[in-house]
Image 1 (cartoon, rainbow, N blue to C red):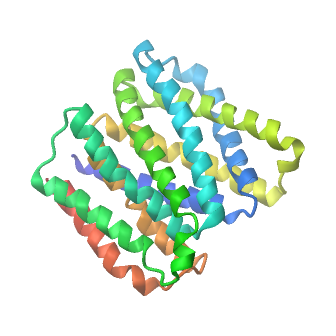
Image 2: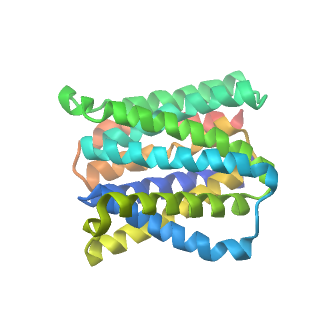
Length: 278
């Protein structure tokens, strides 16, 4: 992996943590995710004519990915309703690298060195340690199943999109229709279920729309990186966003003591270095 790809994916991890924190900050998660999809959907529908059509070989992956992304947001919304941000986010994101790495080895004929496997393992252990740092066992149990389901959805769409963007040979042409279709499907569901009841205040609207823009930006970076590096490594580097999520949870949401994340943070950082050098 080049330094440019590593830095880009690390930035995508930060962007991802920020938009998730914005979505979590709104009391009405249904409205939050609706606004997120409204923002990303409008941007992508406007951009689609200028970006152009994706190659026909990528359409089957796009169709599956749309369903995976909708499922992911449903599970994520459920986990945010039932657990702290600093718990649900690490649990959800922590399950994905292992599953993605395994899928890359089995289905994409990718190969990781012993150091690469060790790097992925260090990152996953650090993420799990972050998710278990709270002493309140009953609090930890809330939302764990939803967060684990979110992780499975993340791993699934990561693999599907990895194949899809390679089939399309263009990250932007793949990402734009993906978000346009996904967002439209989500908004239709919101209107059917909630009708006008989900309409939020101006402040909520601003936060929700901003999270949608950040969501698109971060994922386009990841898709671009997947055309230049193995799926497992890209996924693992992206999951460093859990460090930012833990910091946000401790400092902004007051969910735990900051000092308790230092060891897991160092462990994840070491994993990143090992992956970059493998």
